[in-house]
Amino acid sequence: MLKKFALILFGGYVIALTILSLINVNGLPSLGSSMDDKFYHIAAYVVFTLLCFNYLRTLSLNYKIGVTIAVGVIYGIIIEVLQNTITTLRTLDFYDVAANAIGILIGVVIIKSSKSLKLK
Image (cartoon, rainbow, N blue to C red):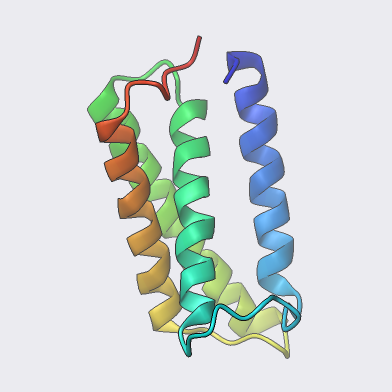
């Protein structure tokens, strides 16, 4: 991913994720599990983690990972609180926060195991 597009991609993704987190998304395809919602959270936060990590291109690896984890967890908690306070269709769910954290951790594992994610 080119450096000049990292902020645009990450910012656009955060905006899209925020909107999707605050509207009714009952039309998502079923994955055949009672935990479909949690799988979507995990996938969303894997992508969030990878894009955030790539945006933080000037920091050392461990610092980038730490900042990425902190940003992801804080953002996920803020979204859950907003769902509970400004929407009538969505509610705060601590299992969603846990699913977000799992997604972040999977993203970190991908980052640590792949050298191909470095910006050029």
